Amino acid sequence: MLKSTLVSHKYKTFYLFSSTTTSWGRDGELSGLKHFLSAFPQGVLSVVADSYDVWNFIDNFVAGPELKGAVEKREGCLVIRPDSGDPKEMVLKVGK
Image (cartoon, rainbow, N blue to C red; front, side):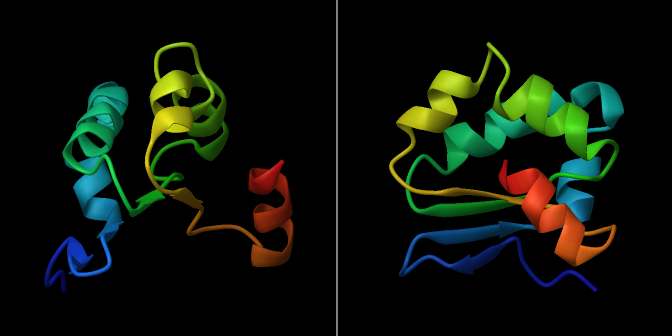
């Protein structure tokens, strides 16, 4: 059960649940990420990246031409969270 998408305003840490990401739909995933980056420009922003395709999310959205600059200029950290797969493998692959 979802209680909130905001974990700690005091420390500017934001956690977005998978359903928050998927509520934008597959075709709206890029728009959703743009919205999250705009709504939370500072602090730690944690985003579930494998709602549909983790590699597409990273290669075409986070590191893609449309958002790479915004991600790099954030005043804080963007945490890309893969919530599926073998954690030992996924953390290393996503971190590259």
